[in-house]
Every structure is written in structure tokens, then in C-alpha cells.
Length: 154
Image 1 (cartoon, rainbow, N blue to C red):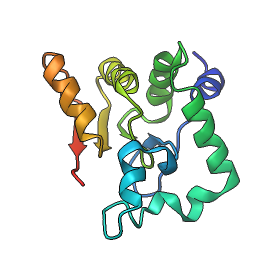
Image 2 (cartoon, one colour):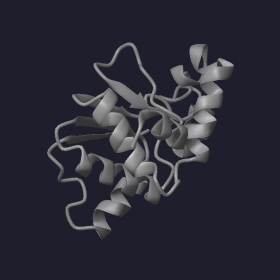
Image 3 (tube, helix red, strand yellow):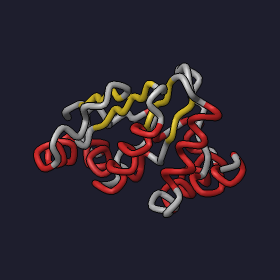
């Protein structure tokens, strides 16, 4: 798959300055748990960096909206694999802003991780309930050597 086609399907990758590779982000305003925590004074999400600054630029918001709208495109996994292999084969961060949108999103990410075994993936999340439920139902779902999931509790 060509990069142009993969970008069209996925909305493209972000390029966070503090990371060694590319990332995939969504709007922090679309976080399920994070949106609730953002309303609680003093919580980890109350001063969320991804709800201000450059994340509010119209081009960033437009890209994040496209990523969210295309999250379940039938070729999303293939497109993400192509982009990671071509643009960020060493390291990849899931959600430098935003978070998991549900089980299908999580399953798709796990498939991308399986299909990019030479890439080190980092998945920070506050979706503890989703991770816990999935882990209880699916045998060894997160036992991928190239995936580091960091679940942070509120």
C-alpha cells in the first residue's frame, strides 16, 4: 500500500517532538475516561496538555477528527502497518493524545503490533476497565514482546 493511500485511510501519523518515532493520536476531547477526569479538579487529566496549545490548531483538530472517523475503516490495520513500516519502523507510540475508543480499536491495535514485530510499540492508556475486561476474556492478549502497555489509574 502506498503512503498516500495509507494516509488517506488513517488520517496519517503525528510526529511528537519528544518521542523517537511517530505516533497516532486522537483528540483528548474524545477520551472516554479522560473526559470525565478532566472535569475533576486536581485529577491527572484536569490540566491535560492535549486540550490546549498546538492541539487546538485547526489543522491538528481536522487530522484528529479524520483519524477518529476512519478508525474502523476495513483497511485501517493494513494502512497502519504500511505507515509504521515506512515512517516509524523502530519505535511507535499509540495516542500521544487521546485514548482507546473501545474493544474493536484495541483489537485493531493488537493486530498492527503483531504485524510489525520489529517495531517497539508503546500504548499508554487510562482505559483500565477496557484493558482488564479484554485481558480476562482473551487468553494472553497482551503477551507481545514488542508491546509495552502502560495503564495508569486515575
